[in-house]
Image 1 (cartoon, helix red, strand yellow):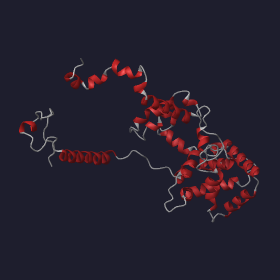
Image 2 (image 1 turned 135 degrees about the horizontal axis):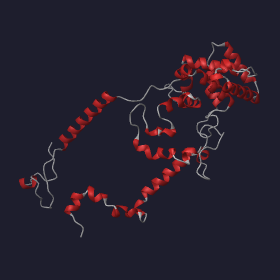
Image 3 (image 1 turned 120 degrees about the horizontal axis):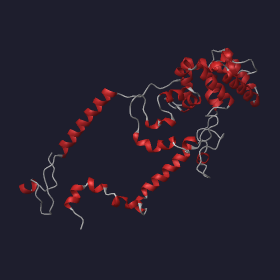
Image 4 (image 1 turned 90 degrees about the vertical axis):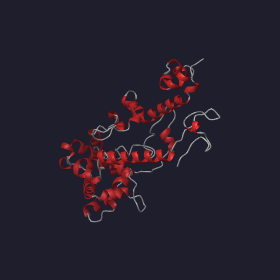
Length: 323
């Protein structure tokens, strides 16, 4: 298919590039052929590069992986969930009201958003999943003892056991000092066994529909432990390691995000618990400044003072000199 900006009755001179009656140069141009060639080249490059380099992403960390590689961390995390001392338990909105969350001065952004994904860390991440285990009588008895105790007693048991685990050599439950921990050791041990069998994964990702693809609870539980963060930092993916712009292995990540993640590496953002809100606010301010560049005196004159554009469009400016 041949297309041209000139009429079919255009003269040979016009088709060869001479101006038409309106002063515009015209020539034949096959748009379809160019589109097909470009499509084929891009497709071959995409398939070839994907086959040669594949994806640098590593296999997702599962509950079974966690329980196999760091069983003591699983036990400590379960005890922390019951004691209400984990990150998810004290996160605040959108999961609970334990904290106000991120803010910008008097603007309580996270609190204003409210609790949109209600989460009781002890109940939703530990007790409810274990309630489905029916072939472990010791665990069943322990869960019954927990449910029948007062809230203060539950917190005391779990807190004492968490503290004892922290003092034990390598956090090994077998090395915990003798104490009154109620049913917490049995619940934590049953939680570990459930994770090792792979059942915990399904119990946490079930979202009430056929596909069961909600990963919120499993990700929160993994983040409450130390294992996931250790794996991330070993691959230079930590927040203070330019994590958002890195990729696993020796692969480039998302370089277009450097401006956003840059602020997490410098004070006061790098030392603030409110860094997410502060960085977000700063980026909104910078974005607004970019939008208003044409209206800001001095800033809008930089292209005139440093005419880099004239170098890029030098052919145009050579043919259209300024008067």
